[in-house]
Amino acid sequence: MKKLMTAFVVVALFAGSVLFMAYGQKESQQTSPVKENVGWTVARLVVGTGVDNREPQGVAETFPASTEKIICFLDAKDIAEDTTVTFVWMFSGKEILKTDLPLKKGPQWRTRADKKINGQKGDWKIEIRDAAGKVVKDIQFKVE
Image (cartoon, rainbow, N blue to C red; front, top):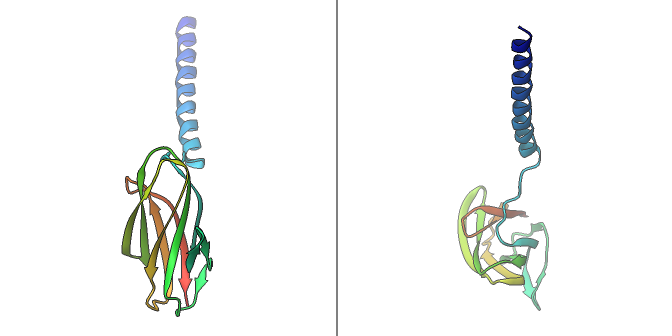
């Protein structure tokens, strides 16, 4: 009987530790999600009204309805290999434009996409997607 009880305790301790490790991993995955490795990082993502000397101009979060076009400027760093990035423009929750642009291998690559606003007042969002179509980062702005 003593051997049986000892065996039971050992099995119970083993099963408990396995469950604890599995639960602990699940909890840590929920509280600190692993960032996907897309082969590059976003150093800067802004919206503005133009670009001068490779730098965004008129950067803001809100634009008047009289603004002719908005540019979305992406500064990417540590690009592991040549790839494509997609700018997805959304207005009032609906996708209205996609622009695919290259990112070239190297320490830095700056690119931009633009959209004529045509006086469309409301909430806008631009998603930056990797070559697999996954959202890497987004930015929101408003036209009043």
